[in-house]
Length: 112
Image (cartoon, rainbow, N blue to C red; front, side, top):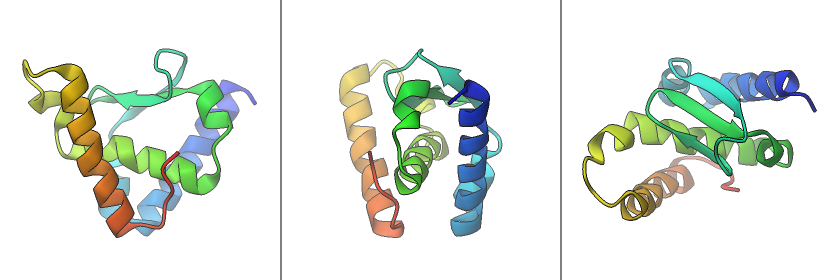
């Protein structure tokens, strides 16, 4: 699967997300998608959504939706901007606990 095909798959998932959860889906359309091997799985710096091509290839649709929403919630909750001088690893773990709890409570998406 080429990066262009992955980009289309992610864009398609964003449309599903927007249908299921319009608020979060709308936020997602303001982020730029970057596909490559810069990150191990996925991540965000608050502006870009980074996806590892090999990791995304193996995801089911519910897992891709869960991953997208996970990264979008980090942006919506301003996690990259609020970290400040806190320990990056500890901050990310705490932020993931919050984000994953929201996903599990509000959706039927799966977390990879």
